Each structure stands twice: as structure tokens, then as C-alpha cells.
Length: 157
Image 1 (cartoon, rainbow, N blue to C red):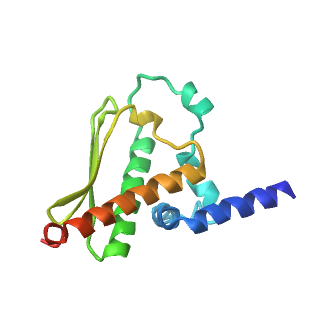
Image 2: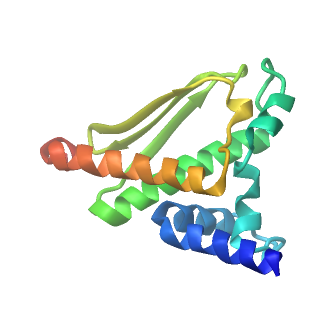
């Protein structure tokens, strides 16, 4: 019974977040062989959830592996698509991470930088909970939409 309740709770968290809905569809779009067809949306998002105990197990110094870089890329691509759905403007991600896991992720619309974040220790990229993942993504989308609203002439250029 508690598994069903937990599944219902995670399904509600995902349904409440436009960003989580978008990132699930982005991850599923990458599944060209159907390996994730039987997985729930929460299972598809599991690699993004790294609680504090699991994060402590990851060494502070380390090179990011391709899986982590792929997840970061999908995270910002999903944010860009969610911004585009809200504004009608293409929000293109630009991610530059060096071999040590330091770098910047930006989203631009036209000539306007609508979101920018410096990352360090990208090999530890993740969120404590599924809800925290959704809130972070929705916050990025909301900030970007507000920036576009503030400078529409630059974003539409």
C-alpha cells in the first residue's frame, strides 16, 4: 500500500511541475531503443535525485563522467523548451564545463542572457528530492520568463 501511496505522491509532484513534465519527455525522447518504456516517470528522473548522504559518498575532486554531463545538458535543454513554451521565444542553452567539473551554463533568447549559473563539482550534480529538482527547474523558467518580460526588445532581436 505504501508503494502505491509513494507512487501517487511522486506522480503528483511531477504533474505539478511544468519543468518536470518537460524533462521527463526530454529523457524519454533520448530512449531510441525503448529501454525506459516500462519505467515510471519517477524512475526516469531517479538519476537527478542525489540526497546528501549519497552526495557525501562522491569524492570532492573528480572528473565528471559522460552520464553526468548528459544529465546536465538535458536539464538545461528542458528548461529552454519550457521557456519557449511560455514565451514563444527559443531559449538556447550554452554549457561549457571543463574536465575538472567547473563551468557555466547559460540560456539565451535572442541577444538576451535570460539565465546564467556557474557550476563547480558538476560530478555531484543532483537534487535532494524530486520536488527540489522541480522547484529548481521551475525557478529557472520563471526567472527567464521574467527577464524576457523585462527586456522584450533584446530577447526578440
